[in-house]
Amino acid sequence: MSSISTCPECGSAAEITERFSLPSTDGPVAHVALSCVAGHHFRMAAERLSARLSLPAGALPGTFQLCIHCRQTAAGYWVSRRNGVVAHRPWCLSCCLELDAASCEIVPFAS
Image (cartoon, rainbow, N blue to C red; front, side):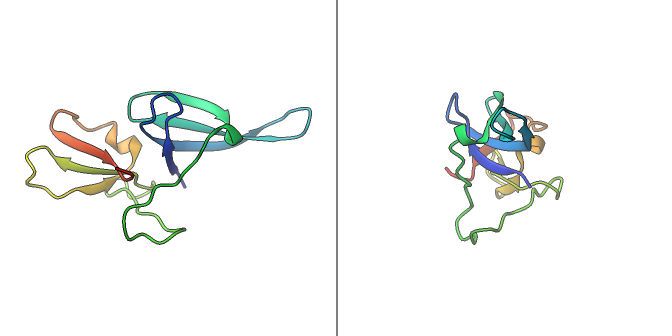
C-alpha cells in the first residue's frame, strides 16, 4: 500500500512508492522511495521522512481510498476537469502523471 506524504524539497504532495531495507553496521535500516507531483524523486532513510498520512475528510484512520483509475493504489489526489463540470475523483500519483495537466485540476487530499 502506498502512503501520502510531503516532498522534502518543495513541500508538495508526494507518494511513498516503495519501502525497503538496506544493511548497515548497526543492522538493517528502513528506507523509502518517494515521488512528488512536481517531479522530484528520492530514496532515503525512512526516519528522515516526516511521513504524515493525509486522509480525505470523513475517512477513518487505517482506511484509504483506492485510485478510481487503476483501482489498485491508494489515492492521494482529487482530480477534476478544469471546466468544473465533472466532480472531483480520487486518483493516485502514478495515474495523475498520465493526465493532461492543462485540462485537469489535480489537488492533494491535504489541501
